[in-house]
Figure 1 (cartoon, helix red, strand yellow):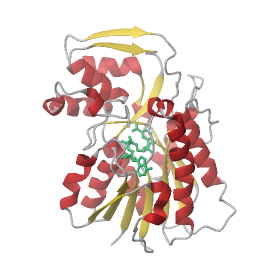
Figure 2 (spheres, helix red, strand yellow):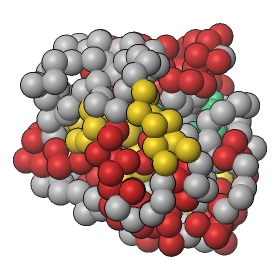
Figure 3 (cartoon, protein in one colour):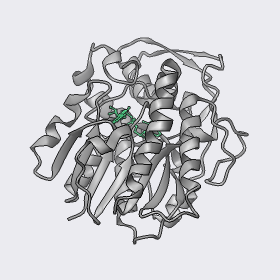
Figure 4 (cartoon, protein in one colour):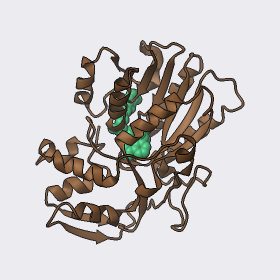
Length: 325
Ligand SMILES: NC(=O)c1ccc[n+]([C@@H]2O[C@H](COP(=O)([O-])OP(=O)(O)OC[C@H]3O[C@@H](n4cnc5c(N)ncnc54)[C@H](O)[C@@H]3O)[C@@H](O)[C@H]2O)c1
């Protein structure tokens, strides 16, 4: 049976990947140190005999008892995720997202693992000409501490190309996620706008014409499954943008999609250069090479939140997201 270790797997994306891989009969280990006290996110997984939890820090893997054999793959998801939280804790960003992740990757250098998948972000493209779409070879212009750290780790991995390493490194640049997860985040555009409009708040949208690609968390889980199933060493040092061309949207398009479903909303559009990121992304490589086609459009994610609104109604949004640790 194949084993997968999800580093930082108790978060928004990792828990959905864990569910999918358990469904597909993998043994799944999550290593996480629960920086948001997000213990509840994995409770339902603990009933599964093929699931194992390790409460630990990925910066110090020598201290934890990871069971690794030659059918083990590793997915690195953990860290301080997002522009606001890294801006709030810049020192921790350096300790975790740069030094910690490097130590974590180096730990696996001497272990017999198969694929080592580093989850990066399309935010690395920063701000690009709106007539263009960024493919994997496009120049990276990370604007935030968060994206700068991701680019540093991508380069750290790519610099190993001439060294002898025991694993197969793969870099996946995720679009902005949306959709339901056992560890819900309402600090991500689609989820946040839907949450606020459901609560009849006046929604202030800054820089409504800025473009961004989106992808449902379940589609990320499908991508991970297909990457894990690719033939050994076929994806060595490959980089993939993860998402789909049809899910490139401006913020105002997202507002329109939600407003079609929730009536009597009040939205104020403002320009403010609060978040200067503006990029459309080209996803033809993943479509061609991994035959990936997104199954869950943005409208599906909005419907999901509307249908499950009772779970979150009148709850403090700060409980669901990367606001503080
Ligand atoms: N959510 C998105 O929109 C999005 C978009 C692009 C890329 N990504 C990438 O996907 C990955 C997962 O994102 P997410 O939304 O699930 O984030 P998240 O914040 O929900 O999850 C991150 C997890 O990492 C854990 N963690 C933090 N520091 C740790 C440490 N030192 N040791 C062990 N665990 C630690 C946290 O406790 C948390 O459970 C990240 O690498 C992120 O950069 C996410």
